[in-house]
Amino acid sequence: MAFRSRTQRTGRGMVPAVLVAVVAVSASGCADWRGANSLPLPGTAGSGPGSYTIQAQLPDVDNIERNSRVRVGDVTVGNVTKIERQGWNALLTMSIDGDVVLPANTTAAVGQTSLLGSLHVELNPPADSPPEGRLAEGSLIPLESSSFYPSTEQTLASVSLVLNGGGIGNIQDITQTLSTAFSGRADELRSLITELDKFIKYLNDQTGDIIAATESLNNLAGQIAEQKPVVDRAIKTIPDALVVLNDQRNNLVDALDQLGKFSALAADSVNQSRDALVKNLKNLGPVLKSLADAGPALTRSLDFYLTFPFPKPTLTKWLRGDYANLTAVIDLTLSRLDASFLTGTFLEGELTELELQWGRTIGQMPSPYTRRNPLVVPYHFDQGP
Image (cartoon, rainbow, N blue to C red; front, side, top):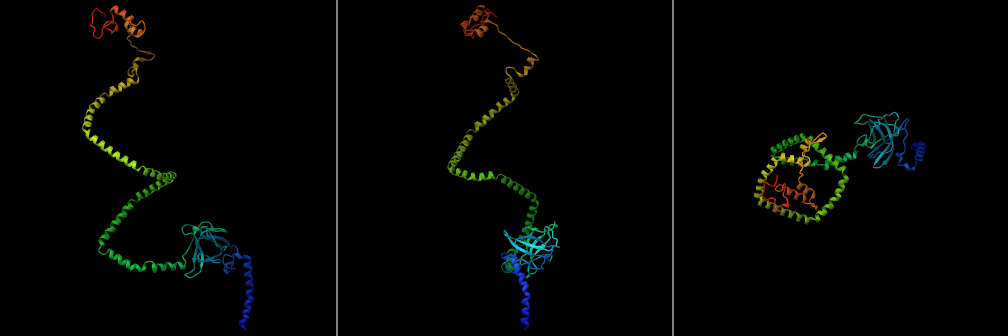
């Protein structure tokens, strides 16, 4: 009777709770129903007045569920209200108590209370930078500020790998092998360590050169990157050029063979004409010396030819101010006038014959009118001046 009575009282007490659960399920909709843990629990942290909602991107949430605790320094300050998939990561929505002040660069991680304890979301201030700003309603903790601690399963799996197949069982074999390898080679090992120390020292001394070479290589890579269209065009063109070279391989071989024969002939010709070439070069020495000795006269003659018919060295003596000095010899003899102005006319030779009659030209100016060779005709003292 007592058990039945207690059961009846318990059944009457559960009616309001069942009604609350039905109302919550109806309010939340069937789409969000994932068991009883998907319902918001009254009285939990982060549900009081002044609470605010923040989000965090996490690479892995492991077994985190809704209503999981959110802790700061081992103190529960909120709970997880929603878990969504965002690409290949998880997006957690958390409700935080209103009196909790967190910096804007807070980090988030999935932690575990103990080895076999429950999972929770742990919020911590940044470890490598000072706190900045403040988390507020709608703030987002980005993926680069999130992480997760290894779970118990991962830790035990790693320990099992190390103990079973990680090589611990082979330590004795490794030690014995090393002992056998180094046995009787202490001096060589000591020398190796000494040489290695010197190598590391030399390498450390060349650090600047190595860095400079690396920077030069980086600059070269940058220049090649800037010339990417040219490099692409060259890469596309080089195969065609190689095809052409391959097609002309026989011609190139023949050309090189003929070039070798020509080189042999040229070498033989040089060997045969070596003595004559040496003699010609020796004979060329005095000619070059004479040319060098005539250098001043040669330059002066070039000066004359550049200003012909007015020599530059005497030009200032001829032209002075508004006047020019002139020296002229004018030949007004009849034969000269005849040769200059009457040659080719019907009066050609008239003035010359007249002068011949006067006896003033014979022997001075060769003339065809003498009917003799003017170069061998004897001179007569009575033929005139």
